Figure (tube, rainbow, N blue to C red):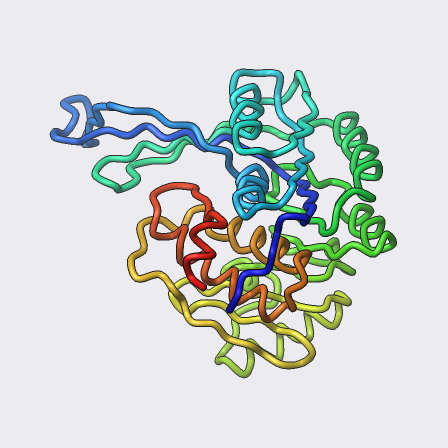
Length: 309
């Protein structure tokens, strides 16, 4: 389908940001100290992760993008600020001196991830309260809100944010985490993957059971839609007591990390540009097919999307 014009779209992204740090190298021997591979690091690279990757994807699709989040007063926080500026994102990153900016360090050899090392702790109440005030100030200047929940403590006030956004007439898309979806009640749509949805509705016995359980969840939460991402099986949109399926688009899959960020970013931008939920899902599926063929957290650019027309 045709990609709508995104030039005037304004997106507000709120959530947990992190720095995705990659160490690329080669492995040619086993350590004499322990039965583990020795990686000789030849190149390093930093990329925005979490909600920062969502914002970067929105900007890559041509939308004017604002990001609200919390970082530490440290080098990774400064690096994130610089990378987001380079990506064209208007980032308001509140600093918390007691916080370590979340860093996910991946050691990669021969296009395979050897290990991931995480550095993180939760932000304190005062900084989160300041972010809520900032959110209220910026609501009027956006067309759509994305709440990117990575369970790191940056969305403590998510229920209030959804209420404020919906009262202002803004669509709200949520990338959920954990087993308490009641806090997302009233959002326009949520975008869980299979394991995330299973954590909430339990194991389904077959497709009919999945459909029934998901529609019950959607109705109980007062949402327009649930978009279930299903890896190699594509994705399913549960809306108006019907289901719309899209097959996976990627011919070759290098890395699925960050694909969910691309999906919710594309959904939000396209809805704000005038697409229906079903049309936005189709475009999000195209975008996901683009990014999983790239190594590491990546974006689908507007030019790449237009090439699909």
